[in-house]
Image (cartoon, rainbow, N blue to C red; front, side, top):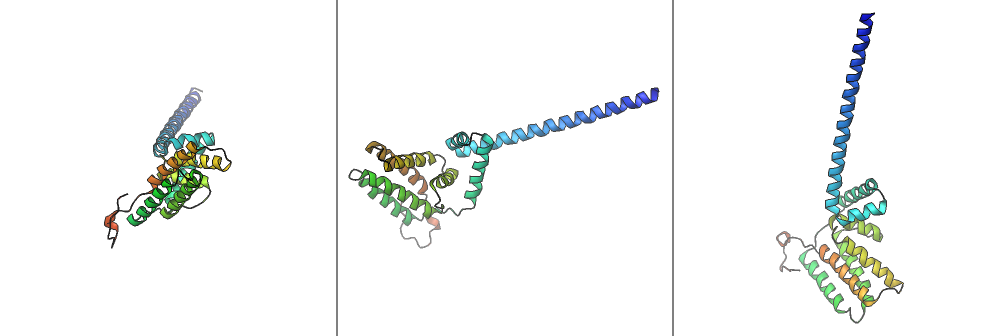
Length: 202
């Protein structure tokens, strides 16, 4: 009888030890997962800046928002985003200068032209021309600091189409488009330009 009791006691002690080991392992696993998740969240916050908070707010969940942001990263990684040659950058800069010079006489038209020029520049760099939200999402991966400008400019342009934007708002739209335009106007290193006769600073 005493032997049976001793065996039962040993069995329970072994079971308790196994359970304790399992609980410690689970606790460690959850701790590591939490740390990895926090590290990943921090990395996404650093990369996307204000766009991170905007996306969390839009999706109503940090997990869903982070899945969306990671999907954006993967999608943009597959794109062939190329810098501009100096001659192309000069052409775009000249086009923007001419556009700005027409603002006083035709503010509504200039906002439309600014949006078209930004789209042309995006396409030249290698961004696909989907709907606005897709374009903004793609831009947010490499240019998170100015994607808010792009959204603001687009919102004003849409209000203008409905007749609800005044001249000051249209001026702000052009300024917002310019912020994105300047970011996108990255130039290929002149040393990589074979046969380039002239180096143009933008």
